[in-house]
Image (cartoon, helix red, strand yellow):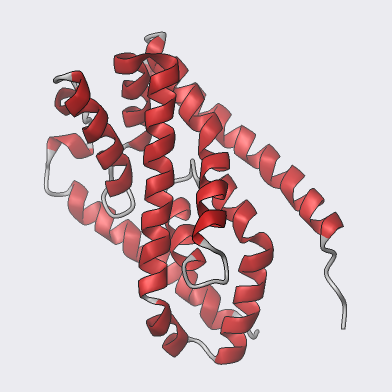
Length: 216
């Protein structure tokens, strides 16, 4: 029960992000549904815009998978994947920065013991959690924000985000470069989530063997 308030904070952040997404979506702004028209302009502008949209996905309901597919369509599988990778890592670091900035507020919401225990859990599992949640909306942002209040470093966060974003960025860019249909996009997303699940399972086994939980 010691971490009940911490988990409540986790869900509160996730719900807050979800509400923000719904509010933004209700404005009727077109690129929240499909940023394709915006990114069909000049290539350099589209590259900057695509990366910016992926970073904005921390706070706004940007369809990041569509942005990544468009990167592949406009720039090819290699450059497209690189742009998506950069955008996803910067998004994770943005969430991490928000958590760092709000660390004092988080400490006021939980006890010192809860903060220390949660920090220990995030230090042990945070890198894996950041990596495997990158393709998952809401969870990716929530984990990155909470990681900012943990002992994890900026370097660890960046490397974890890069590891977790590499496969989705490459797969979506490939789909875009090969003009995959909407149905195929859905299949690609399902494949990315499946790969994420496998990586989580493997990661928990490896981490558990390296750092077994010590019983009191």
